Amino acid sequence: MAETSSAAPSSSALLPVFARMDLAFERGEGAWLMSTTGERYLDFGSGIAVNALGHAHPHLVEALKAQAEKLWHTSNLYKMPDGERLAQRLVEHSFADTVFFTNSGAEALECAIKMARKYHSASGHPERFRIITFEGAFHGRTLATLAAGGQQKYLDGFGPKVEGFDQVPFADHDAIEKAITPETAAILIEPIQGEGGVRVVPTQCLRGLRELCDRHGLLLIFDEVQCGVGRSGKLFAYERSGIAPDIMALAKGIGGGFPMGACIATKEAGKGMTAGSHGTTFGGNPLAMAVGNAVLDVILAPGFLDHVEKTALLFKQRLAELKDRHPRIIAEIRGEGLLIGLKMAVPNTEMTAALLKEHVLAVGAGDNVVRLLPPLIIDDALVGEAVSRLDRACSHIEADMGLSQKKAVGA
Image (cartoon, rainbow, N blue to C red; front, side, top):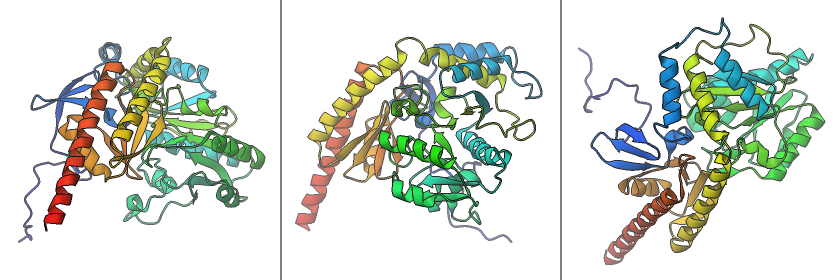
């Protein structure tokens, strides 16, 4: 007879790899979500920076519905007219010459890693396969992207770490230069670390990486899965630095909630990726391409990115005032555009829990940070609403702290 567990049986057939909270949503509109119990939540997590244009954006809904009534899938054995159009638009508005569509950020990073290695092999240097990455980085959950991120908590139990990644401290140029060997192929970095605590890489550091790569014949890879497609206030975060990478991974916001990603690159960086060297079944499918084009319609419209930057500036100003009112709760305001981090003076889990009581969704991150990732469509009124709820959340934590101190004195 099989051994029975004393624990209560799970009511879900889902693999229990997520610590899901007891909260579910049935519909959304703009920056708001409606729970299955009829409660409204202000969504300042955006599905972890995915719902760039909020929920049920009419232009995206119409594009998806129109495509769904025509064609869902044909495979990459045939031409994809909407994919050609979306790729051309990405090329026209970036440093890139070529695009490969994926279903996720991890796949986009896998393509970037393979592309960098294949570039050197095609250049007659197959020994150059190692990639320098940075502590605190997060590049995905595949075996290769886990190795690139290098965080032990994600690597434990999955056997030998994939070879070929050399981690250095965040923004430490001496360590970067020392890590370069005859086997180094590329440097991979997030211009703004998201999972790592909303740490913005200084402009001089990104420029220094470009100079190092040029001097040593390396490729520079940017991971803009979280900070790209308008999130930083620019279409791409690299634009703030005045330099460009050779390869860049995109996802999250580019699909506005529909699963898609892209690896974009210069013609030179992609020269080794010839027919048969890489592939995907679902990447670039008609549904994704219709939504991706619709997202760009909105984000590239005149004035949209100016609105994001203006709103972000107001939000950060209001958050700075909030920090001044609650110095025991908030230690620092970080980020660019609407990728904002609150470095907490209390455990970040306390803040996310307090915000949930105020019906605000936010996302935790490394370095004891709470991420605020609102839809890019928010306005001044929603900034005010969010700050009011943040203020109340801080006050509740302070009250609990005072109560705990009184109990400790009484004890």
